[in-house]
Amino acid sequence: MKFGGTSVRNDQAMRNVAGIIRSSLSKKPVIVVSALAGITDLLERSLGEALQQDNRAMLATVKKIRIRHTTMIDALFEDTSSHESMKYFIDSEIEKLRVLLGALVTIRVDIPNLRHAALSIGEMLSSRILNALLRETGIDSAFVDAREFMITGDNEDGPAPIPDEIRKAAGAIFPPLMKKHETVVTQGFVAATLGGVPTTLGRNGSDHSASLLGAALGAREIQIWTDVNGILTADPTIVPFARPLDLMTFDEACELSYFGARVLHPAAIQPALKKGIPVRVLNSHHPEESGTLIVDRSEENGPSLIKSVAYKENITLITIQSSSIFLAPDLLGRFLQEMAHYGKHVYAVNKSATRLSLTIENTTNIDRVLEKLPLGGEARIESEKAIVSVVGSDVQKNPQVTWQILKLLHRAGIYPELISQNTSQISFMFIINQNDIKKTVRLLHKTYIEPHWT
Ligand code: ADP
Ligand code: ASP
Ligand code: MG
Image (tube, rainbow, N blue to C red; front, side, top):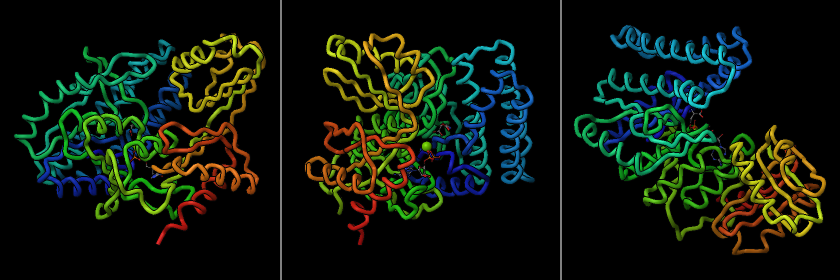
């Protein structure tokens, strides 16, 4: 059971989580918890302030982080014996953070492992609080530091998990604890190299942690508890009445999360998929709702061809027009390599003899990357773009859908660029101007999803 930051944002939410765990104890759950909502952002901000030598701002941010946690323990543990020890624990973690930030102020260089150590503090705090709350309410819960089993490489561009090592380490640690205790609490996101150097699984990586651990332990189900009723037909901030989907395939969920539905980290699906473990997305504020079940394969396609609409903002479209593109067969490969170096995804690519179009996540390094490449012509760089993607198992079995969508958008004055149908046959995506996101998502939702609602 993975509880995201939105599920532990305050003391009331944390109590809810404890209640949900209590009612699942017969299934012997292992708990993976994220930092309180917004804390990793604050930790990231404090690192930036340290690097800019802005001591005052940095200390103010650290204070905010401390207050969020002390307010929570004051509400949860008032008058209990846990209060003093939790306060001591929070203060010691905050002190650790101050030391790490102080080192950054002095050395003035960003060191990835120091960054990972500082960012991990959010999860170290939330997991200790949850464990103490469970124990305080009479649940016999054990605590494990994820750095003992969530093993990654030490790659500067983003440490990758090593499933075999995770299986070995988790296999040795968890079964004896689960025999002895009712549940075990650990952190999402937090990881370490085999040598014990702190790493993380990247922003929003707790879903990935849960899936890796669930796969390592051969879980019956991996539950992702969040603040909405499952995977919805669209982002509820754009379509507030979007509805949850009962069932999705791993592929559909993966496409959807890759193209922006932040409810699930795209990497979270892979470990579960390999082991055939179903993933369920549930709402911790409404545990009675059935949520979305993600399975390997499904014969049921649901009422509509298109299941959900996703979008991803902050995209840059690069168009290189040059007669020498076909003379430089390694141009694309070199571009992809450079982008990987900066940890940036390249989404859709379109190549002809004289034109190369690419969509990437916004990055300040693009000029530096392009300077290194033999373009043989001008590159047009347009930021403020977005990717919109429609997902559903049958999207491409019905080729007329794609031109219908293009016609619909054209009539609405939206002119998509770099249209791409991928070979997985389950999604169709295109690039639009960022300020057309709302209009586009709402139009597609209204035309292709809502008419099928009963
Ligand atoms: P958590 O703290 O649980 O990890 P996230 O903020 O990462 O939560 O993800 C949940 C949020 O994802 C929801 O509150 C919702 O606003 C957003 N979201 C975007 N697209 C979708 C979608 N298609 N289905 C469900 N939620 C979505
Ligand atoms: N706390 C981390 C983040 O905010 C990981 C997660 O919540 O999934 O990115
Ligand atoms: Mg999340």
